[in-house]
Image (cartoon, rainbow, N blue to C red; front, top):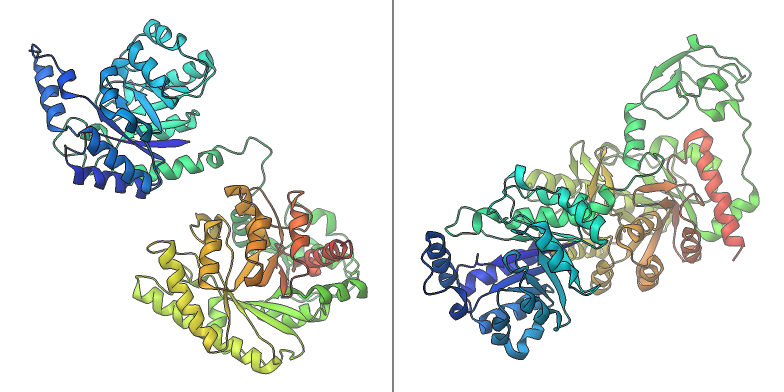
Length: 605
């Protein structure tokens, strides 16, 4: 999907304003800008006497920019990595640009010149893509104009030549008509009063949208009222990039990670009302249905309620499948393989001892809430014989993310306080174990631009490194599941971030699951990113993934090509934390499965 911001005559004949419009277009994320050109000597007849002619003639003269000026502006736009196009109204006007006509990436036939065969032929001879607006013509004229064209190199543009177009005149169904009749890509040249009509055109499958850009819709001039501001173009650009994802889903339904989180937090499971022992048989009177949803629910309780318990269960504990099943211990071979690969498991303060006993692999990562970090954490029961890492909380309170550079002083100060306390905990563990205890942080908020983000965070993280604690920014997914909803992230998840990380020499926690999701979203090579950052990857998170939001899947349940990527990092000399979703439930069933699968992958090398 290409977005073209037409500058047209909204520059008001001012080079400075034209540059402002180019800057605004670039910052709005569009692909291209387009100009118009009329040689004043070829534009209006001296005998034009109609009132409308007088208005248009004066506007055209007032907004004139010379070929040299347009070439200079086009050069400037190209420096901003924008494509540049131009509309002509007469074949003679092309000659005014001489050889410099080659600077343009595409040309446009305005609606009023659709039947101008000489102009169309002359532009086609320049071997650049040609867009043709179909407004102001009846179907027979459209057919005559398009039938004479070659089979490729041009795109018809649905257009209503009103300025502006009201909702009841948009006639977007003509897009489908053109697609069916000509079997070609179709564009939309929008003069709509409501820019949101462009979103409907995107949904109908247009491949390019052209719309005039202005700094002020209320400004004096003919085109401003049918134009869009940079803010609107930014929204259009965002939607154009996301439209394939927005329209996806023509397949059996799969709940995304955010939905699973909400189902866990808001849903319910069965909890026992008192202590029960191995061999007891429960009935429904022994249970309460409460949140959160981390165990058996109404869909599966019937399969288990009449079975005898295989182990003791304490009052108020959630009822899970593992309570009714034999506990199959994980083999020594798998444990030894996990130690060799330096695999680690996520733990909470309340389940640390249980997880350590169940999985004696010698490495764990503390995943703590903001309340836990700010409390007095007692390290007395923490074994000095393990290796540890800490995951910095994503949240500083129930409504705000971690952001040490927030413009909100309260959010900034609370973020720094949480960060400081996590660093203190890291130092305590380092003193206890004699080993480094890295901190993994999901730094995701960009306040100015990418460069500023990396400069700020690099300075902050290097300050803590000088005091003996390494904080590793985590490779992030394209979509994060914050506060029960999905949030698009704009940093630490694209190929361009590799160069910034290398430039600043930052250590990285490479999250393989997030990397896979980014590969599927941005279409980059995940293996290349791992290779380019190999010397900086100090920590790894491992889980499988599918699509753009299928996060935390069991190893082997994701896209088939993921196994090779996981295999690529298993021999890296750092801790590798298994982050399979809900792996700790059902007596650690998900983690057991992951350890066995990773051992198979590793031993198969």
